[in-house]
Length: 415
Image 1: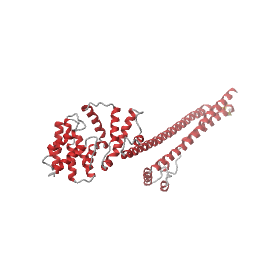
Image 2: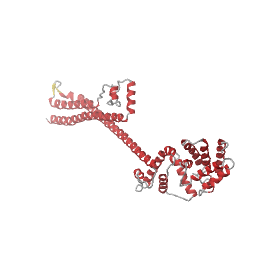
Image 3: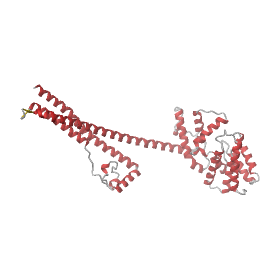
Image 4: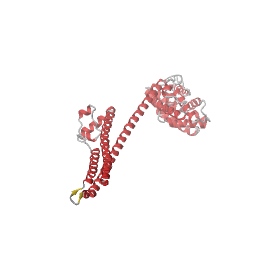
């Protein structure tokens, strides 16, 4: 039996830390002390999730502290050397039964893993727990570097991605706790690796659905399920971004068209105002011959030109004239999902509390939100249609009226 659990764990941690610093070459950038610390933490969490007793959990932690110390002499059969290191450290401190348990757990981590009982399954899952954690990409790059430094394995990006995908698909967590805790994140890592493979070689990379159906290559039904769910979530996210882009683009187009209509209307107002001012200041004095007789020859075309300018200005003003609605939406309309709270004309007379309540209701219901945005776009389109209808009449009056007026002036001067 272990006489003092806590002190022996601390002693083992200090010994292993010093052992790695003095004996394990720095080129083992993956199988380093940091990996051991992470694995010890994972084995404790998984073991507690499996509801093991404190004594068994500490045995697993002690085995994990020593499971990679054999890398001091290289990766081949390092598990046996790790057992030898553990024996030298633990002999006389724990019982032979506990020592045998530690040996058995260390040997179980040999790849390919073939754990027999729950303890071996837990330490195996902890040893590869980084596959389903946020630290995966850092550990992944370290492993590639370690292969290059210690095994002369210089892989291209394509070869490395293929290696990782094959390993991840061939691996399966043994305990239900590890599967529940790590599989979803692991599936997302696989999905990202698949994206990398598609980018590196589009013709070679299968889809996630195809991978999930490759029973001879991926026996892990949990990963299949999570992969398909993850792919579905990705599609929904893409759909959501597509919807947002559609609304954003349409709103921008409506806003630009409205600004263009207002700009054109302002242009017509300015031009016609200038024409009227010139008409009044220069032509009106010439309409009276000899001071009191009206000049009919100039009066008719001048009147036509004046009517043209006034007509254009009227319809230009109509196209820019704002129309504000009552400005009050009832709670009943919001509950029935018929209200549009995105246009100020619909809510400017509402109490602040009702408006905030309505906005919160809309944000809680995506269907209501998208429906409101669609209605808002529809009514913006109605407003734009009226703007451009009046603007079209304005330009037609100005164009044809100006032509007729100039022809009338030409006839008057000719006569």
